[in-house]
Image (tube, rainbow, N blue to C red; front, side, top):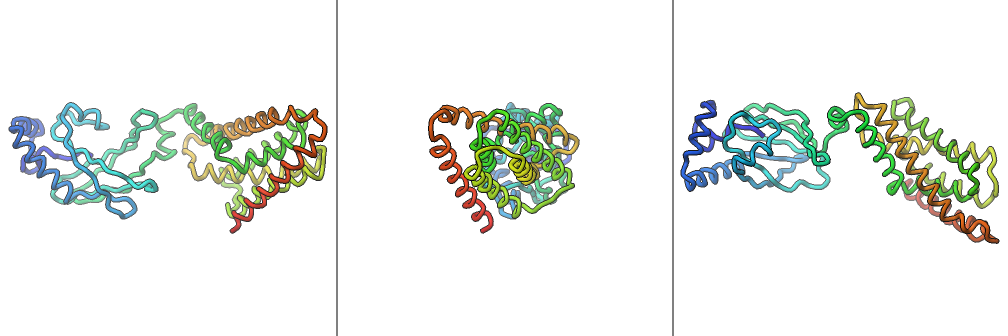
Length: 335
């Protein structure tokens, strides 16, 4: 926030020469300046309001030394005088806040910047007239802001990381479905066929849904994803080899999983102007996470394959557990 605080501190009307105001502030005796700062602090507390979702937020006001000012401003003015810093706690679920100052203050230039990975990211400013409340300021940078400030490669890397995290460790339902595929057979060929069908299907619906061509309510998608876990697991108990019907089934369920991925991507937001690298990055992250699950599960199960009774002692019990888990997840998502 940039405002003519020098004039307020000195009790003068705004509009004086900035350099003269700064010199006048600097010439104040220390005790007198502290007294005036306390009065100005009280003015902030009474006449400035910061709100989130209509709720007024408390804040503490301080006046940092001039040496600190440049680092605390996005675009510092050429002449630096008195700068106020407002600090306070914001509710964890808050998405944005607004700023308002009474007529006791002059016009305000409200600048917005975010700290992204230790780098300051500017997001524009607002010029507020006297006693005008600001538009809501988002507490986190939007996908659009991030994309405007970062190149396509950086956006690709960001969304690849988000895609991976959606599988490992956050995508329990997708992990369980992939485990169901691995349990049927550890043959590299059969695993490749199943994973390829699943990948092709969810890539297709992820792209179509993200571009607005396919829509399905999450209240349908999420229970069906859970049921896909149960169905694949039941098939593992009833059959011992891969067939075309299994591949068709995996492809069909992959279409639904793709809609689930699209729902997550919709919540994250896609940056305009960087749609392609974001979509490709997210999908690649999902594939890499899925591949990690397949490799780890196959490595853990491989030592048991040569043993007698592998299917009876490992595949069937694990598949039954998966089926029950999938059914429980489906019921909980419907209710």
